Image (spheres, rainbow, N blue to C red):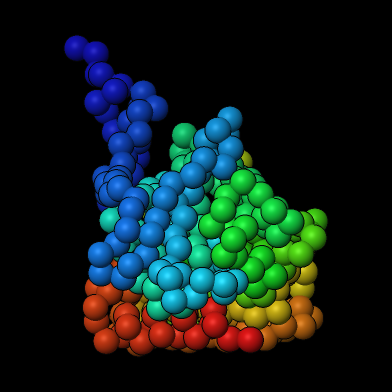
Length: 320
């Protein structure tokens, strides 16, 4: 009896995604959607916009209550969600809740980018989509179609951030913006990389040497980036030898947040050290939250450590 390829699993990774031999993709988490609107707890308004209908790039915008700041121009944060490049979206409950809280406390406008997901859209698609979204935001420095950005945004105080895969994206869009620039009047002031998804062929620091764990990490990377040169591809290992390096990053401040019980902790540490040694010329700050795991601030946002994390991120966005 023939096996149905649409029912036979080819690969399942990290309880995130299941790919069948037919090519069908099943996402195991992160696919919930909550509507945009005014959040009753924070007063933050959100709405969904299409950035490029042909490519399928969209975003959820967040605006704090500006009734007490009617003439203020606010910093603009471009945020990239995590999920291993293959799950989640800006429209999920966890990211909508997180951005509502961050926008209310930091008094920034946030643009949470919906990039296309692997494996249907393998890397470098997410990088292309994310850079296009950043350029769309930056184009409002000289006026544009989106009134929240033109009326309330200060594109001279532009930030990029993300968690996990989104932090990887934030690094790369800051690097690419450093190469090709942004619209006149738009400037990236800082990048906040939260539990960044970086890896490499050889372990660094106290990173796990467990063969099975490392092979599983490699399988995920090869699933989302099938054209990769390997685990020292600079897309996943920005410290690998050769171009493009780190010194061209298009900002002068970087915050790297790591978690003490996170598998990716040592990579975040190494990235921060590498940035300082690269000749980049900016200021890099690395903060570790002990006793917590990957994206703990999303899983338990009301905890004391998550609130302390939020305070650091707010301070980073509000610093002159």
